[in-house]
Each structure stands twice: as structure tokens, then as C-alpha cells.
Image (cartoon, rainbow, N blue to C red; front, side, top):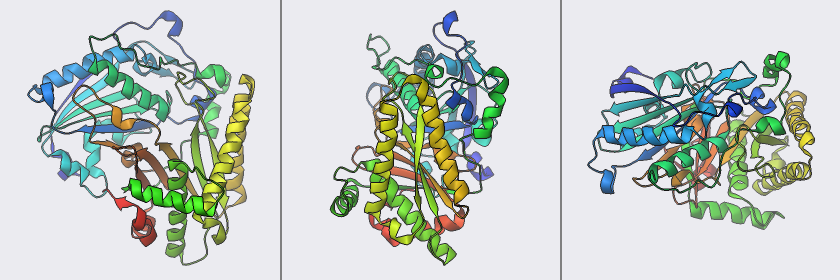
Length: 446
């Protein structure tokens, strides 16, 4: 973070928030699943921005807002107790109730200045500095939070959660569960999903002495020097893209994730071709897929798989064709898991990773594009008692450095369009963000 940006921060204080109730002895040492063991120790950040607080919160002093969040965070940690513990190598989590770090910061600028910054640098102000600067090596608590007060009266609530403990679904449920408790502190309202950290039952870990070797299969991508940028696709533009797919393929009900992923993949390949002034390079699209269902919705941790499609020729870049290939692969993967016995879940998942790695090995001149989507998750429903967020910033916009050719998709505030963040090498991004076909449907947001 540059000195000009860091000078905007006027004060920072740190607290440790512990679970409201002690973790039962029977739950104090959950084993990591094999998929947890595969994931690197990266912290995934997510931030929710709220404009000047309305109704009864508008005149509350900053410390009252902080106390409101601290109390509800303590209560939700009773349900999400692993985040208040510490990792025991790559084997298990010691759920010792030591707590999580909670920072409170004041920033001398309006919230709008953060939104309008061209390449996300100022977004990092709403996250704990040490975590953002050391996302792959941070040794503090497994969950770190920050409440940021802007001089316009707005606030941001951010969290950085260890990927070892959970995936995007886990993080989303944590945030919504926390908000439910904060919004109704005296109510008996029960969050619809009661979390269980039982992933090791479905994906048994390796033996203790072999756990360190699982990192050879690490599924966190290698870091490279890249830049990130945001775009939005409105409801009308999304409808137009879907119509194009429906007219030209057998897929008559394309999902938002399928259409947007295929469109971005197509434009990224096309602009990369222009940069290199040659024919297209063999390219791979990796799509993460949530395994709930068929696994229970209450199962937290890393409960996901992936599928891939390969594009080797220019004629395969057609949008409808890419969507059709995505649908075919996704349906095949879903069918494998649908009828699988518990003991077959891990072999199927490892086979999916092996297939993806084989495609990379057998096509050495490749470009790999990774897609992750939380479009179906209600990110804009996170209401702590003062209304819903004005903006939610996705994880890869704050990766340090960003992951090359990574695309993260979220529903927009109205849940009928898509907000996306992408990261690429700078020269590739310069071509991508100027692509006329891309800009017909996607508008820059940063």
C-alpha cells in the first residue's frame, strides 16, 4: 500500500473476541478433511460497505456500533468455533477458544473515494494491514475482522478467513449468521443452517505422518504480478447474452454463472490472441463447483470440486459452444456425485483434479482461466441492523498479489445482474478492458 493511501488512516485499535460459550470438549479437535489439507493457508477477504447509517443507528457513537458487532461476533463464534482456534500443523484444529482479532479503524475520506479508485489499491484500507500484506503466511487468528469508519458516516465490515477452515460457502454462511444475530440480539430467531465442521467424515484426511505431503497437491494457484479490475453486467445485458446462447445451442436454460463465465473466457482468449498477434493458445477454463448438495448444507469446510473445459481451436470460442461444453461437464460431474457412496466421494474429487492436471500437462502452451462464483448466494442480504450493504467487494480484488487469470462472480445488489472481478497480467488487462465486444455487455466499475 502506498504512503499516500496509508496516510488516510487516522486510528487503529485491536481487540480479541472470544466465543460467547466455551466449545464442548467433544468438538475441540476436529480433523481437517483431505480437501482442507490440499488448500494452502491463504486468507480469503470479503468486505461489505454500508452508507451513512439510517434509522436508530444514525446518531450512535462509533464505540456503540463496535460493541454491537463485537457482542454478536462473540455469539456466532460459538457456532463457528474452529475460527477461534489454531491449526495443528496440517492435521487438525485446536479449538481452544483463544478468539479472533477484531480491528476498528477510522479513515479520513468518504466511502465513494474507495469505490472510484481505478485499480483497487484503496480497497485494502478496509482490511487489517498485516493480513492483506501476508495473505499466504499470516500467523495470527484463523479469522480476522475490521470495522472501518469513513468521515462521511458510512462504515465497512470486512473479514479475512483462513481457507484451511472453509470455502466461500462457509464464509457466506458465517457472515449471514453473524448478521442475523446482530440484527435480532434479543430474539430467539434461529439461523436456518446450523453449521457442522464434519468434512473429514466425507473426505477422510491422510495419516498424520503423511499430512505435510498433501501440499504437493496444493490447489491454491501460484502467485504472479497482476492487476485486478471490476466490471458489472446489467440485467438487460445478461438477458441479451442468454438469448444469444439459447438461439445457438441446445441449452435452453443457461445459468448466470455459465453465461458470464463463458463470455469472459471467450473475450479473454480473443484479447490474448491480439496481444500475441498469433492464433489462439490452447486454453483451459477451471470452474469450482459447490458439493452441497448432495452433501448436507450444514457441512462447513472446503466442500467443493472442479471441472474443466479445453479450447484448442478458434471455432471452439463461440459463446454458445462454450456454454454447451460447460453444461455437459457440469452435468457429468453432478451425476458422479449424485449416486456416489460416502467412500467414493474423495476418489471422485481427486480424479477431477487429476483430469484437470492432465489437461495442463498435455497442453504445455496453455492459458489457464479460473472461475469461482457466489452468484446464487445472498451477499447483499447481510443486514446487521442498519440496512443492507451498498456494495460487496469480492475476494480477488484484494489478493496480494492477485492470482493470474482469476475471475470471481457475484450477484449485484438487485440480484438480477452480475458483478465480477478479474485479475490478469497488466498487458493482458490493458487489452481486455478495451475489448469492444466485452464493453458492449460489461461496464467497468473501477
